[in-house]
Image (tube, rainbow over all chains, first blue to last red; front, side):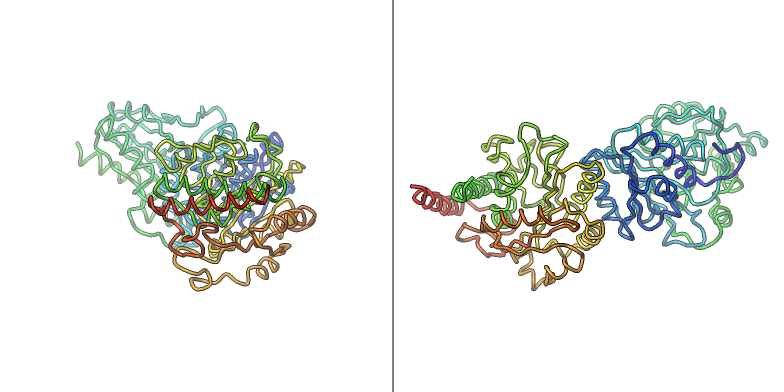
Length: 316
Length: 280
């Protein structure tokens, strides 16, 4: 467990948790595609070399091998960068893992814009959209070390395919060990009445800071963390929307297909509400430091604060 | 089973294929017919399986990587006792367990859902890895098409299986020389297939895929090969034993009409009669 406020990347949390769960459950096997140092599966490999398979740079093959391992009773975790895990190997995930509903856990690191310097080819801004549409796939996007560890454990306890989105950059630990985590349930982090702000993944940090700033300005924000994007917690979204009448989503993902779309689906079906989707707007990313990119695309605390304020003002 | 009984069974597999595809008014007769002896040898001789216990963790497994040949696999499974052969008539119909491409979730005894070419071979490798990890003695078979070798994933998978020395894995290539758009060698030639797999550290065996003596010997040799996976290149005739389908490109993915169905079933009936005479 990392200290509240200290900084650790969720991929590190994944590596630690794999080591812990690997000792508890001999059926866990781990696959990687030549990125084990980056995805942190190397930590598992070091401890359990017989249960680790480096498939080399061949992500499609890796995913279908994972399917075969699951069909024979193993609990495989398959890791690569989100771009290659969900983009390159999409069809293997759909047809060999999703369709037969096999017990494969896909844990992809380096998701989102905070990949940073590698640029647009490596900044996967569509993994949530791709994974969310596969029937039976659970999609989780943890905010910090604490939540990431809970996600990995929940993935093992759940029978069926799971996608876990992990980041490259160190992010603040925002939840202490007392947090209540349940797969498929969101959590209210701050109660408010003027606007609902729904954040996922590392956007929780920006959203928490934005909430403080907006409250200081007199805008009352109800802040919700949605870690499980599928199945999504409809109840928490609808109840809050009824209360505030305005909803903002915040994600480090294209605004098409991710959390914003999932929330739009829930609201338009159950509680039509004005919605503002914060994310990357239908453009490819670019090289830069993670912090510079978060600022440029208005995903940092300042960017979220400004966008929520503008939305509240124009819908008053 | 002796060879005569195996031949009769393979002919019944072919009747099942034609019955199913005719009833479905769609499907893939050509590449199913070319695999009939391979399915028969696997289900009736080679594989340690029990239709009463289709999920037995110790069973041998077959991953039909060329999933479109499932009418042949279904017919062999039915004849082996997994389900009544009459069910072949439900092939590809709404609500049937006999999907257009195999679904493990629907039909007990199907070891992997396949259909998108290239993926089944990788999944078979995953099963072989699991067997080795669990120190189980089961073997994993995977039937591939020769056209399927054009998929890049096949070579990703072959590289991995060879390097992992997976000697509990046996791939069979239904080398019928035809694919949808024409002759395999004209579309995008995967030959020399054997040399390629040898380079990927496989033990390579080439046989006539319609000859039960050769099939039996090849599977035995594969079982006895240690330290590397085996690939059996089975030379076959697409559309085998149905006069107008043999070596005809057009019969990859098309169902016979009523008239053609009658001709096909008559072709197979004549083979039945011939085999009955041999028995007498």
